[in-house]
Image 1: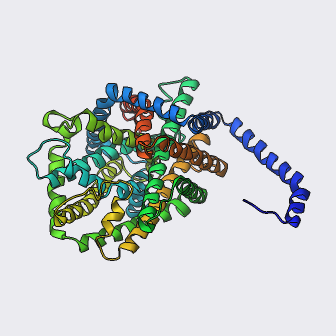
Image 2: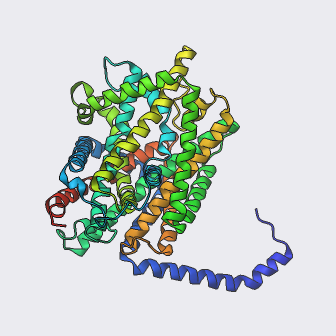
Length: 524
């Protein structure tokens, strides 16, 4: 409760009319700004409506989403798998073909960013907090509950399947979009709009606006899912560290904090904000990774990394098709692989466009092989270090009581078994916030490019607008995740992503066909 002194009440009364007038002017200007931009107004309107419905009819919204996600899973689940494999094979084919020599920019132009800065930015935008969320929990889950019967050791099978869900396919979705958009931007000199990739084949303005709106909605859903998961993990870490129950209010505050910092970073732009934070994130993450690596059984980690990577490469195609003995069953695929593929698809527009935006001066070969190989191998080593170390901890305990079963607290429990546990845990919380900031700020920047007529450096009004509405939608998702005692943010995000990613998956097929038939073959 706020207590006012007589002086403060007098001050408020005296200035009330002026304050209301200023507030009214800001409101009118904001509404006028949104109304002038059709793409922005439609997208914001849909997101705002969804947020209101979710807040005021939370349980009903969850039931509707649950039913729709079951329908998508039953009819289109395997379509996601086939699309992922096709993307990987297509990108490898283009990278190794003569088309791989095509430069995104002028012939003698050098890359705009160094390999280190480029890798840091694409990894921070594309994965970020997710590798902290799943570092221990996922490999251990796969070890304790193998996805399918196999002659492989449970530890190798667990890492192989974890690699599969975080490896080439995820980055192929991003890389495909980065290639098509990069070609449109720097070879054909198009605007930063998804519809620009197909505008020569689809002339109708309504259809093109519909494609851009669909892309924006897909991007926002994927982004708010990541923020919801990340803030819930930070909350779980705080609960573990302080042995207290930080509840819904703390999660909502964290969402506000992350969105605010991300807005400031996006306001500063790519060079002053996003690049600096991304490089700092990767540097701190590498230090944590190396600390655990040198504090654990290095020989076992390296052996696990090499053998699991080898089996992943050998079994990649049957894994990608869920073929024969590699089929873990519809329930497992729904809970894990379908959800991951939907997540990567939802992140493909803004991550792919952001990668395209920072890839000026690189060839298609450099772009595609760099996107497919560098972050994938880094992710494989990350999961090998944490997964193999967790396997050895469990073996040393002699019995496993699901210590790493909670996705939101598993990494904090893991660090308790190492020296400097408190420092590691607080560093992880810092990294979770920082990684989420880099994902959100790059998404805000890309969404602003979409709605500001495809400009490469969008106005700051657009950046502010998207920061506010992303925060609003995130809070709606967090409330949705607390609708019932038996659901959480992860469950709500899984179901919502599987639905919203479907139309975009079909569009990606059409976009790719048009790109291969009409754009790539044109003389340059």
